[in-house]
Image (cartoon, rainbow, N blue to C red; front, side, top):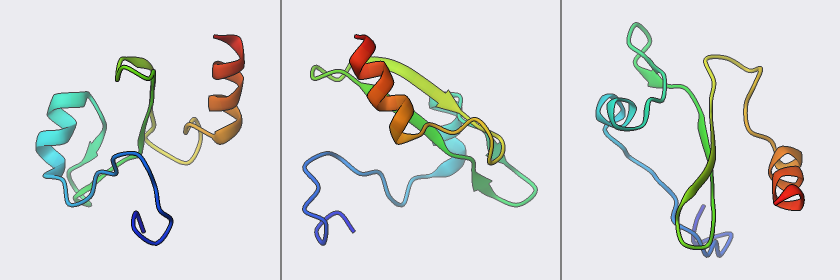
Length: 73
C-alpha cells in the first residue's frame, strides 16, 4: 500500500502487537489476539500532538479530527 499510494510518511506493518501495546498504551485484545487502532498526530519534528486509543468503532481518529486540530494549532 505504501508503495502503491506513494506515501511519504512511515507506515507500521508487521508489528509485535503485544510489545507495541505495552510501549504505547494501545489496547491489545488478548482473547482475539489483535491490536485495536491507535491514532497519532505528529508535528513536523515527530512530537506527538495527540493520541487517540480506541477499543471499538467509536472514538477513532478521523480525517476531520486531524484537520480540525491542525486548523486549531
